[in-house]
Amino acid sequence: MSDPTRRRPPRPPAPRRRPRKDPVRVLAFEALRAVDERDAYANLVLPPLLRRARDAGELDARDAAFATELVYGTLRRQGTYDAVIAACVDRPLREVDPPVLDVLSLGAHQLLGTRTPPHAAVSASVDLARFVLSDGRAKFVNAVLRRIAAHDLDGWLARVAPPFEDDPVEHLSLVHAHPRWIVSALWDALGPRAGREEIEALLAADNERPEVTLVARPGRSTVEELLGPDGQQARPGHWSPYAARFTEGGEPGAVAAVREGRAGVQDEGSQLVALALANAPLAGGDARWLDGCAGPGGKAALLAALAAGRGAALVAAEKQQHRARLVARALAGNPGPYQVVTADGTRPAWRPGTFDRVLVDVPCTGLGALRRRPEARWRRRPEDLDGFAPLQRALLAEALDAARPGGVVGYATCSPHPAETRAVVEDVLRGPRSGGAEWIDARPLLPGVPELGEGPDVQLWPHRHGTDAMYLALLRRTG
Image 1 (cartoon, rainbow, N blue to C red):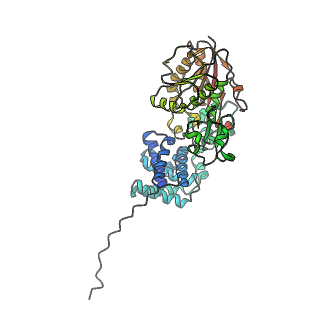
Image 2 (cartoon, rainbow, N blue to C red):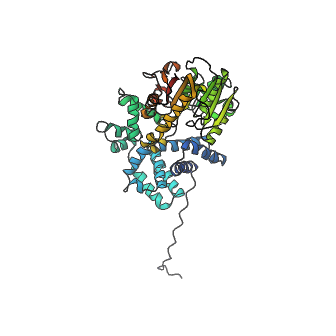
Image 3 (cartoon, rainbow, N blue to C red):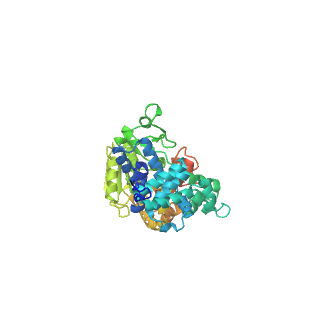
């Protein structure tokens, strides 16, 4: 008979089951890691990740939409979430491992920026940490997210953001998730009469998902074709006669004209810049056009189609060879003559006075496209303005030199910062390289577009026009 007082040896604890893979959150985590580790852009990283997951049968359309929201929403509000997380940890954020911080940020976005129930957001984030990190780090994630779940977004903003009356720029920076210097720069760019209501409208517009806008390339496609039967695919653009706006859930690749290159994806502000240059009054010949900074090819394709309709030819120049290939792909099948060249616009491969119309859409900080590249706001620094300045001035000076007397030059940039817009034009016009040039009032060349300012240049805005914040100055070569 066995001794009932004899104790059996304790069983060893069962090994903890590794959590099942959550394809949506793992994909979002991988995208954030690529953005952080490789300085990649989400709009380039995310599509192949989504394709791979769909091909593997891991995601349906709803899952893909949620993964996209997790990535873009987390990146947009990164600065705000960092402030909230910092209030919930016992160490400086720089001492938190970046992969752990990415999991925390994804969890914070689910708690504060989506309708995910708090218990589900915490539980899923902890499982994600266990799957991609370790059990020990998952415990840390659990503790921090439970603290974050104690308040909603408004409650946290009341704790981490100073009152507007005490520090308006810092308040807006945290409430609308923009770096402080960008808030200040955008407010200045809006002009001295812009008050709190307008700057908040602009910052809020930067945090909205932009509509996908298509362009019907003249002579190759029509807006009616893009709208599809009964307008089920898209709606007409606001301002450009060649624009169509996708409704919710529209997929550009599903449109035959886009697949065949007869139409493309192009923001309406970008379309307006090309149209204004093409329609600027011109005395004399109108046979030779130049796009001096053509990559990746959207404006060049529209200009080439417009030029073809007038019997003119476009030269599309791009310095980087891989971007020049993108330009060639965008222009393939254009009905009129064109040429794509790999050339540096500051060291032109053409003779002075060659062209009737010249466009230079210069490299810039991209502060006008923060809706599309939300991570850019956290990467840019004020000193980047100084880095772009010499190139922007050199490109405009060479563009003026490339135009014949009486020819028209368009200077464009996807930034509203005064240091990248009017200051560049004024400096070049005052300098010895201008060759003699005068302003053209660009406003009449954007018919129907409201609130274009006092001229002669034009600044578009997301909150006013629903476009990227494109800038355009038109100049006529006089000497």
